[in-house]
Length: 41
Image 1 (cartoon, rainbow, N blue to C red):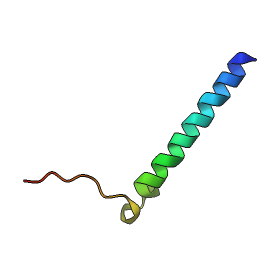
Image 2: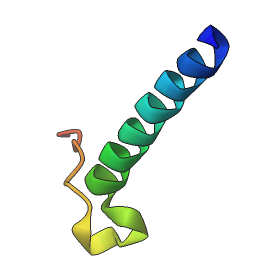
Image 3: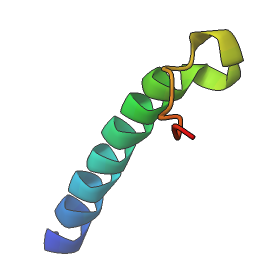
């Protein structure tokens, strides 16, 4: 039972991180991406 609970906790954590990354990276739409750092030359 502990294995199942630990698996579910890890799964939910991973899903939350995935959702955050999708919001940050614009879900494949380059216009919705946050601007990245640009090196000044």
